Amino acid sequence: MGWLDRRRQAAVSVAVLALTSGVLVSSATAEPPSEEDIATAREAEGRTASSIAELEVELATLATQLEDATVRAQLANEDYLGAQEALDEATARADEAREAAETAQAEVEQQRTEIGRIAMSAYRSGPGALGPIEPLLSADSFENAMQRATTTERMGTRADETLQRFQATELVAATFQRRADEAAAAQQDATAALAAAAEETRAAASGAETQLALSADRREGLIAQLAEQRGTTAELERERQDAQDEERRRREAQVARAAALEAAREQDTASRANERPASPAQPAPAPSRPESEPSRPAPEPARPAPEPTRPAPEPTRPAPEPTRPAPEPTTPAPPKPEPKPEPAPQPPPSSSSGARAALDWARTQLGKPYVWGAAGPNGYDCSGLTQTAFARAGISLPRTTKAQYAATSRVPVDQLQPGDLIFYSNNSAASGIYHVAIYAGGGMRLHAPSPGKNVELVPMYWPNVLPYGGRV
Image (cartoon, rainbow, N blue to C red):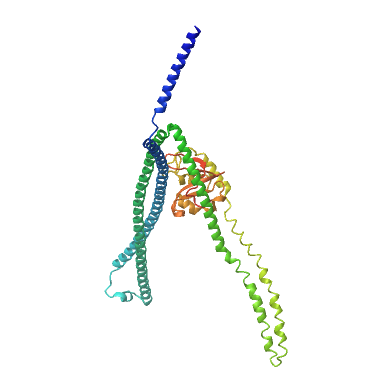
């Protein structure tokens, strides 16, 4: 039995060896990947990476296009609001001119009636065959004749004065009527401009809303493609893209904030430079004093002309005098730095009670929708919110963002206080202002943002911020 067991064990060992050898031989005979296979794999990997990069670029482009569409719509809304203000002003001028023309025309009619009464009186009296001497001949005494002549002369003078007044009144009425016609024409032009601005605003708003919808749909599609390319889920990829968008906005905000602060510093430096020459000019006469003092002893040598020996030392006496006033230019030197700090307190004092009251009221409107051209109570655009908020605090502001910028005092953006206004411009100037927000303190802003969004309290957004805000 022992021998048989040893034989079976040997057979099993041989079988195992044979199987193992087969596996080894099979593994050894497998062909390695060719250069073509490697190139194909690398090409596929490159296509995937390129596709991912293109998708991410398109996503970023979509965000930029949406922001541009929103700015265009807000600018169009500003044009519409400006056209509405222009129409209101034109209507007020037209009404005023029309009332003035009507008043002047009523005066004309009154003068016309007076002239008619005088003419009727003259007609009833008759022309008189003897003309001007008739009152003299028909009188029964010299005194009566003189009285009648004086009365006739006075009547003629009064008629002339009435006629002159009538002619002057007619000229005034014609002038007022011309102004009324011009005002009515301006009102018609303003009405047409408002209609055009309204159409432009509707088109821009529709374009922004369409861009918003297209961007949202396209973004979801791109995110799905990215998830497939990376082998992840759409939810994870969406979170990744949201984080990337937030990081992009953060970087843009940092750059924009630095640019706004630098622009404010440059403008402040330029304003100080314009004021600086006024102060150094004051001590300028100091050096001229020593020049005039040596000129005083100049006549003295002329007096002792017969005695040339005496005036010789005289000029030596004033010689040391210029050394005395020499320190004088150094004494006015210290005042030079004094005027420099003067422009520092440029920002006007904040009407904290009114501005904070406006901010507090605006907080009660959080969550209400953005509505084109609206100033409450159910919705707002950006300047409608600020105007209404300050009106609730007893402060009157114009309707448009540009007018609000002009109506407020300038304050550097690094010195903003709660209740100050923040302005956004697409050309770094007042002419390009398209949006306004209320600074809420702590790097936060409260505003009515754009269509599809609600009044919100969010961190500062620095791109396109003007270097100076507005203080009421």
